[in-house]
Image (cartoon, rainbow, N blue to C red; front, side, top):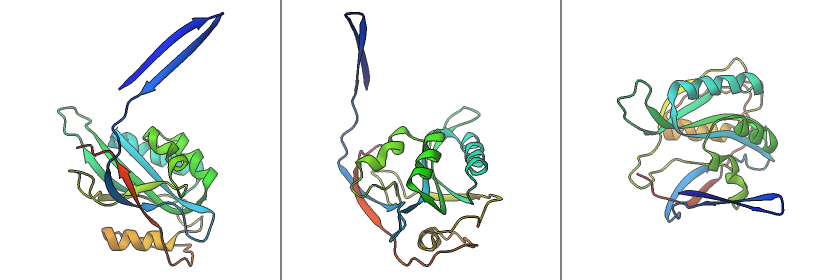
Length: 195
């Protein structure tokens, strides 16, 4: 629920906004964007309720604008609809190396979930986290496809994130510029149970 009030005093308008959100109380697990032993991150983008073609077009535009490699797409939720373009939920993962500020610019340039944009501010490890376990009645995200990029291999790539995606989801990523990291961080966090 969202509410907003305006109050005009002494030639100035004060705007008060209140947001009521479901209190996080269900524990789930996810992978961290941070690349261990570095100041870098891989790219995670969390889209909620978006037309799939719109999401793909946007990711391709971001790949061109910011020159990053292939993106693995996972479906997190599908809203069935009589509509010609039903919307769903998607996670996007690129295992390229990015600075914190690069990821911020890319995520801010996207139309992803707004809560996801600011999530590192509230995460104790200052990471973006994408769920890879069940969440209430929602299943584990399902791998759908790769969005291929002409910039694949231009940046250094996280071999541990690629190894995880391969083991967890069976995705075969042929890294052209792998790092030598051997560990990855996972996080347990509270989330609101949405069905």
